[in-house]
Image 1 (spheres, one colour):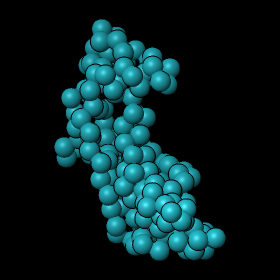
Image 2 (cartoon, rainbow, N blue to C red):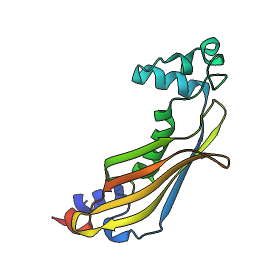
Image 3 (cartoon, rainbow, N blue to C red):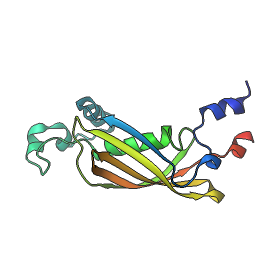
Length: 152
């Protein structure tokens, strides 16, 4: 099989396929296991995430998920849905607006707001919601492959 065709099958959207207004979503219910595993993988053992008694004495009145765990769901949207496999994450601005707890279903969304053809760059508005509450928002910049680049 032609390796260019194989790579095209594995690729997400090519730059030529994208337009302002396109969007993609990924949703996941955060579990206790997600929080514990994220703590272990990152080494972030902040007691607000892993110690119920400590967390009860905070403004959150209980344990919360790591902000970066929530933000990683934005990465999932960008890396697996749109623009998808083959893209390169260049930057992400984030604002954490509300806590996420075990049992919450987080919906992460990316919406294309700008295309920069000369550099094959894509700018997306990114949000994560629990129900009607925005828990995290920001902006991502991605580098996206073109079909012409794949054929070289």
